[in-house]
Every structure is written in structure tokens, then in C-alpha cells.
Amino acid sequence: MNKQKFLEGIRLFNEHKFFECHDLFEEIWMSEEGSDAEFFRALIHLAVGCYHMNNGNYRGAKSQLIKGTQKLEPYKPEHLGIRVAPLVESFRDVILDVERVVQGQLPPDDIRGKPIIEYQ
Image 1: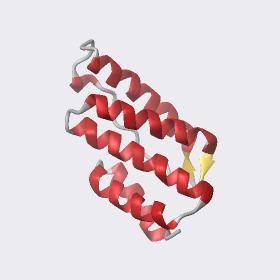
Image 2: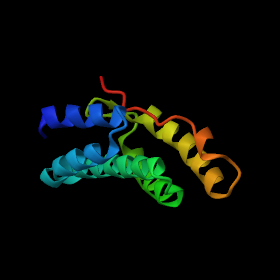
Image 3: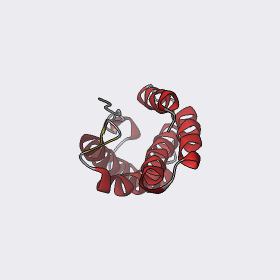
């Protein structure tokens, strides 16, 4: 794994530059094999889900965020220096809010903030 690209992907995610983050994590994902490839695939799902949220596609966002959090479960509590457990828990809250938006029970502006990737 290219550590510089990895750290850049985290920075882009945390700055809510989800399209660019997706591209970078996809580049890393395509060069990985096995378990780490699935880990990057999960991060890609999260970035795409956040991108959809930013563009008002809440159904698409929900689908991608669910896929991403499910794929991250085996990597809890930490993987490659990323604190996975709090990331998954934060996105579970966001998924609940997105579902409420889809059902017309919550205004989109009330979705809890987009979680950040904590790297140590």
C-alpha cells in the first residue's frame, strides 16, 4: 500500500472531498489483495455514500453507507491505524438519520454531521 496516498485519502475524506477521496481509495483498492482490498472497498462505499448525501440522493447514500459499515465490521476495533469501531458507530447514526429523511420524518439539514476517519 502506498502510505502517502492512504494518508491523502483520509485527509480528503475528513475534508468532505468525497469524490476525490473515492478516486484515491479506488486506486489503492485496485492494487491491494485479500483483506486489505475489502477494507478499502468499505471506505470507498462510505465516501460514495457521503457524496450521494451531499447531492441529495438519500436512497443511494443509505445503500452505500450500509454496505460500507457492514464491510468494516470485521476490522473493528482498528485496522491500518484507522479507528474502525467509532467510525462504524458514527455512520450507524447517520444511516438512521438518512432513513428518516427518506421516510419524510427528518429534514435533510438535520442529519448528524459526517463522521471523520480517526487515524493514529
